[in-house]
Image (tube, rainbow, N blue to C red; front, side, top):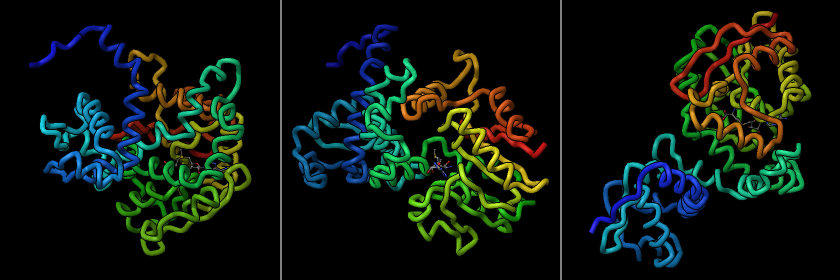
Length: 339
Ligand SMILES: C[S@@+](CC[C@H](N)C(=O)[O-])C[C@H]1O[C@@H](n2cnc3c(N)ncnc32)[C@H](O)[C@@H]1O
């Protein structure tokens, strides 16, 4: 018999209050690869599914039932488990899979940092209070979480890599340098669309060491390890900082932007790929503000920024904002040129 559903603001708030429970269960099923063990069009018995995941069926079915109440997986009365449109997004072989994001948001690093969120309100860094080290030191010390972070950035649900390649005309660029370019996915997408360009991924040593050879487009993409606080390779036509500045407070952003400016030729351009924060939350996307607080939890005074804040940072670095180009993703391209 269908159960009457509570509705209204109280019910909506009640679900939001328990959001962490849903995140934690999603991480668990993503870690187990549950979605990959169910064929996209078929079902599987809970016993076979539990055996494939190497866990006990009873606790697993209880978690899957709770997720099915959010339309993530379906659980039939006989206990067989199937897919829904949402659970299919957790399959690893889905384009722009959300499995990595499900594993990442509630992974140990962010989970403990959010547990210390209060510290931010008195000037501390929640992540550092939880782990006694900075986020990037933590990633160096936890290679499994570091590679998960790289995969999450590569598959982030915003599909920004393809969206950036589609929204900007790179046809006159010979060399494009992606600074803090992660696993190279953005350059891979751009160079696939613009076959005469070459690319350079610049990131931390441990990150570029793990870039997969099949992402390098037969040598059209090269990699270089180093720190953007020290120096950035010179001579590219386009420099990109995609989702990099929001990891840093203003003074560090100025150091990164000035290092870019020093590497740029007089006719080079700098493209920032960032979610530009709408000053009025009533008109903004909830994920923009969640990202802003995620930055606070992980890095303290790092944050997402408004257009005016970007103009100010660029101007202090000898750069002039030329235009902001929207993409199909929440990330906009902020184009800047040397003053
Ligand atoms: C949020 S991720 C963005 C990755 C990539 N641009 C993307 O959009 O998927 C920030 C990147 O900055 C890199 N990074 C952090 N500190 C760095 C440093 N000092 N020098 C170079 N890269 C750094 C990280 O390793 C990471 O790949």
